[in-house]
Length: 356
Image (tube, rainbow, N blue to C red; front, side, top):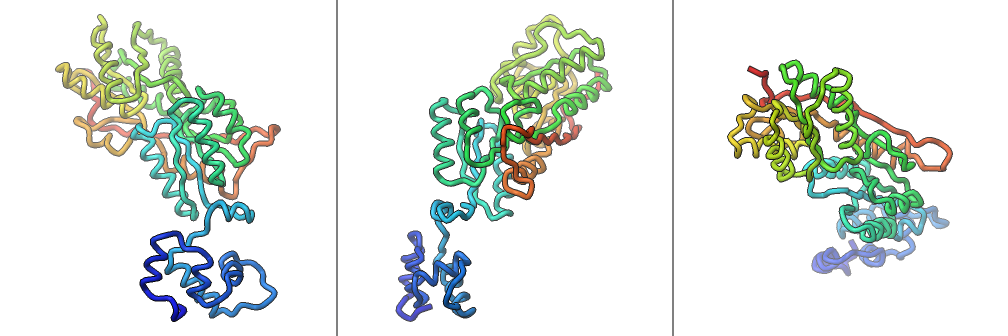
């Protein structure tokens, strides 16, 4: 490092965003030389390997990071991946965001996170912000089909958009990666049927995307098996602990109570188990409960939750690959967008048992 630069100057520079000018002064070279080295640009005058190594070492010591907007103006990737999350309070999406961050980091990307569970105008402003920050692609986490203005805005986006967990039958023009909801629901129902359950209720959140598919799969299974569902056995409540509590309280008022409940999400299943304890209903002796997702806390409930395991990491990896990888896809209005559907797996724990 140039003798003119002291360690105190280095510390002061690192407290703010260091510039190419700072690096040039510390290295004792021209700013244009720094620019050519850090951007791997061709030079008419040869720059020695020793100078290149010195400039890069100083840039690293100062903590220099190229500004994404400046990179985009030069036509280089900004190395930013935008993520629009439907409901950031949902524990499932917390795990999905973590998986997305890990996948992005492995590719050298940082994630710019936005929360879409807001007024339509705010959601539109969110996507405009992500584009203004020069994200190289956008990943949608959770179904946003009830936000038509937002979806239309995204269709005209100048960057690739990939939708995760939007269900398998959306017609929004985005590449989609999701789970085989029907296979997951069928595996849970077969498990309960083998335990002797015939009175099985379904509790879901807002009937969009994946949740709607899980509800439909539940109804289709009973129709195929010629099992008549008693009235009130399909409930839609807020997707949370409180929603599960509300659903069970309502189901317990029925003349013919269910012996098992299949919840569309783990968080609903946990609310049901909690409410069962409050109402003096033993799980699984009097009521079996199955969830869907296998979020980390599912194994720690009392009793531990039988659930359909979501291949979250694989879904995220496939989505990022569609957005940024070799299979990166852009909508041209002619080709059908690719749709990947991954298989879930039933995880049997202690919240289900045979009817005695």
